[in-house]
Image (cartoon, rainbow over all chains, first blue to last red; front, side, top):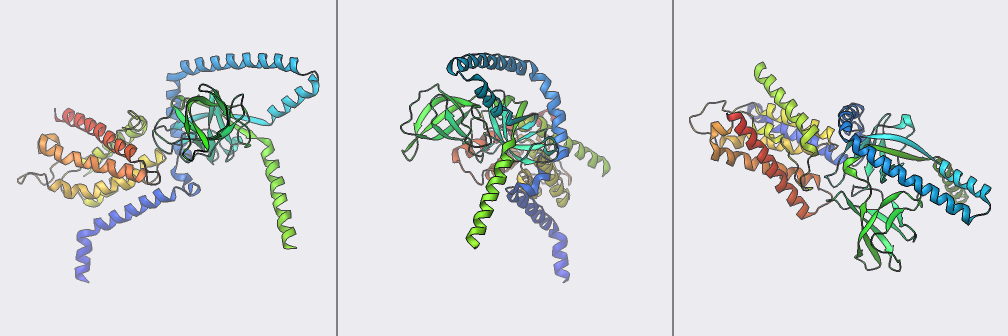
Amino acid sequence: MKNLLEFLRHHYHWLIFLFLEAVSLSLLFSYNSYQNSVWFSSANALVGRFYQWTSAVESYFSLTKVNEDLTLRNYYLERQVTQLRRLYGEATQKMDSKEQQGLDSLSRYQLIAAKVVSNELGKMDNMMTIDKGSADGVDVGMGVACGRGVVGVTYLVSDHYSVVIPVLNTHASRISCAIRGYGYFGVLRWYGEDAAYAYVEDIPRHARFKRGDWVETNGYSSIFPPGVLVGQIVEVYNARDGLSYKLKVRLTTDFGNLRDVVVISDRSIAARMRLMQAARDSLKLNVRE
Amino acid sequence: MSADFLKRLGWFALFFLAQVLVLGRIHLFHYATPLLYVYFVAMFPRNHEKWAVLVWSFLLGLLIDVFSNTPGLAAASLTVIAAIQPHYLELYVPRDSADNLKPSLVTLGPVKYAYYIIPIVLVYCLLFYSLEMFTFFNALYWLMCVVGSSLITLVLIFTLEIGRGH
């Protein structure tokens, strides 16, 4: 007994070491179940507030560039709208009903403007924090975009902050996208290293397109509406299985310089989920009978 | 005790703020990120209480983790370094030196100090990036991260050491 006490007195720091290591490693490995650790991530209100301060200061340095980008983008969009409106008018005779439909499809998407308060580029699994949360109507699984293209999908939501999994994350949800003007579709993946490029996979072999074509979301999922820019094709590879093409695209979103984003909340999702749930329930009941 | 404690607290805050606000955002060539805070652990004097080294390092690691969305990563790696440091330092202290010798370029001499600090930084970067890439392993990328970050961290540490020596 005395020996044991003596031993502990000399070596108790190793016990402390083991204890601290156990705490760190359990934090490290339980982080995959993010819900438990919302306190240890930057969705935590205190950390969020801190990053808000620093990014409030930092945002002044890039205001000129951001304004330039916005103005350019605005100009481009405005021109596109007038062009499209003219084409639309030429192509359709029944203006009233069609125009009403177009308006309906836009009003489905409610946009929540948010500011990026922390962002990462250099890791395999980058995360981003924005300053809007459930109190502002943000929910888990909503699409996030900026003026220049797609950004990511919300993953964790607290009252006033949300963590977004951006495209630059090897575990990012695979955003469904299509080649503009052709319609062939694939999924967006990222494999680390360069924050300016991502890959579009599962493009069918018979697809026809060329380098420099634009890739945009195709609206098959309810996360992103169709037509949000993703990037421009710079390289075409054969997929490993030889059954499809893999495209290297230059992302239009500049993740290194991201301040203002919008969260796209689809009002029809809730209705769709309810319908789906009702269908599942009724199936279960029928099977039981 | 309190003067020493306050001084250490100052260094703690300095390394934490520097990492979270500036250094953690540097990704030179996509690979090299300065992990300067390991210098905080290397600065502990000879015969400092071992439990105190562990707790200081764990807290610094945890705080940096919380602010960079990597719970447990820096804490786990830095605690390992803190457990090794007191024993490792003994190898390089001259025989007739003070009990509370502070490891630095001046007290150990440039060659011994380099022998002391380079393995510490290398091991730290090795642990850090190995734990980070636990699920997604890309050997070349991992190696570049370890080497790049070690180099840039060492450059910073030697700059600081030379600055403090004068």
